[in-house]
Length: 204
Image (cartoon, rainbow, N blue to C red; front, side):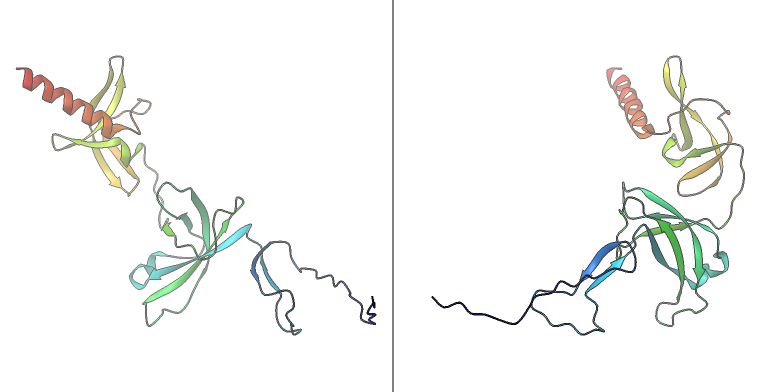
């Protein structure tokens, strides 16, 4: 049996990344020839991510650098907080929007590049004496009501609301500071109360 000899030798080439991070693209494959200008891998530091928002022209007067932004990727997903670090000076002719960039910490790597998000920009802040979540407010007999905790259980009380957002409402009357109320599950309490009232009426 003849043994073929070769003068060729194999060498290991060490490739060092300029930064620590996660490989998000791979262009290196066994047997391929790569030119010096071609990247082998694309590495990104995902501990913080840029969130690019498109701000409509009508909203631009209310948006500025440094404002707080809440970022959400969907229903029942955690929210992330950041501030606007860059506001583009140009409005796109196609979309009539301008770019606002938010830097968000991504310690758990749950935010992935390319994901669509919903953002809420805090354009103004006002201190109010008493605020409740919108989930606590139910309409009972055409009046805004909250279920307050008593010794006999929860009972609805009519309230007067002031300024509101999609998540919170200012309470002007009907609820006192320190009173315990149902911040969650108010819809279930209303349904149970309606069911009980229907049963009483039916028995009579």
